[in-house]
Length: 300
Ligand SMILES: [Zn+2]
Image 1: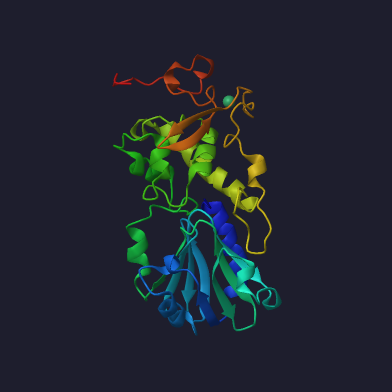
Image 2: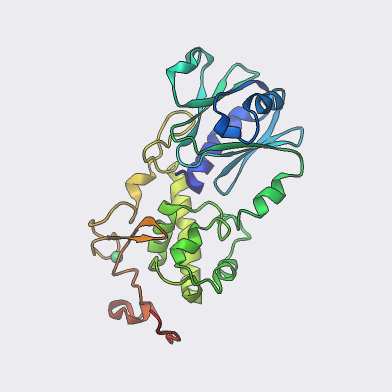
């Protein structure tokens, strides 16, 4: 699934193409994309709208129109937006996974394809976006307002494993399975540690690790696994630089220990068993890095 770096890359590619352009025609071929609304009705509403900006919040692409309305796009598992030349898009049957096509007033097309069809388009009226997102999304991890202290507030009193807490979009917006594993490796925190047990030093490392993992992903235009592709058809390169994700058995970049794989919150999870000890106070080799803390509970 595209995560924050992939969606941000899509946004950055789409923004210069869409901004200032008017939707001349819109075809929505899949009712699932806009349900419970009728595809023809949504398409008709979109025609004539002129794009003011293309933004991102969490894993959502936000297309803002001059009218104040918003088209909120979530790519989910396999959605992608592609820019195409009019001459290449004459026959929609050429791509059975194309679900919608927007023709712009300069003659170019933006098509939406989605193999597994979990993606969504939602047209919101002025004023509806903020309430919609505020109940679903926590802080933006790359925003200046997101600090280690804010992260600590979000994790306090949560017994869930830290990995599960970070996958919850209401904790932080935009993290998914890949970048959570990468951030926890950078922070040297075991994915099963209870969120509430993360101490202040670890919080600082986690805050830095989250940002560093996401920024690395953006710098490499995201990671291409299976269906993710950029709007111009090119691929991201982050998958070549994963520290742990998908690397079970390979040596840890930091200590050489083979990367281990487990499951957390139902998701495949990769970590270094040496750098990311489940009980940090007992990690003899790195005791200097992990000041011992009193273990108040003995239930684990
Ligand atoms: Zn290691």
